[in-house]
Length: 375
Image (cartoon, rainbow, N blue to C red):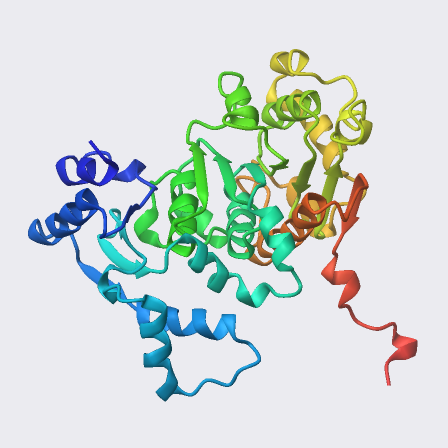
């Protein structure tokens, strides 16, 4: 039974579905499925903008030529080479919202969708990036990173891990709608990515990252090229880093405070201390015996108590007193998505090689001038 047939017969697991069905109408089975979707009233919205996409494709292939609107019909017919435009490209069915979208097929779709990357990302670089695999654990902060990576097409495969579901209090920083409350965060992120680019490969780990699935996460199918760690749990932070170091995979962490990005190049320095030596005394075995209270000094040391923003320090003192947990802002999370994606891209293209901690502190970069300089 193909993926779309299972949708038509069983909607009980709709909350877990995150992959669309890609239908090519020159394939007999796909065309039969396409027709059955309409027959069974499984489609609530159809978007067919293939003509406009073909215009963009032709324009992208002829950047030095000014093409008038009157010229496009002939150029498009020539490109179709006798094929019915309704059967050109692919039809993508999204079962979670019952939408059907007509798109260019993968090669042409990617060419047009990434065209405005040129030449901040060259065609040669884009082709190298599509072979890369990035893993992300923690899909609150990580959602912004995953979506930015997907939009730039910084890789060809994403692996997303988080056991948690979306709650109302998450919506101050997670880009999603209230209709997704209760859904796993990995499913929310994967669906959004698929709605941007259905040809990206996304693998989700909805029970989080743990000892039982770490090897599959890091090595399944092929080894990750880069690991982004943005989870809250200290155990997962430590265990995943030991595993990344074992497999010589670089690690990036975004703390969404003062724009801090942490980079550990285990691919170039396989003996490098975990978290630059700030986690000395902790390993996957010893951390299991610590209580939450005993973990706090380690957490403060790792995130840098002396380099935290003033407001985060003050907030940490109020946790479990006047606030439930430490604060996170959408602006900081979005900034982290941009900074992390930029660093990921440069590491994957062999343009950045260092380990360390780096700050994009907007309070310092865009702040009030000293009084003596105010005119």
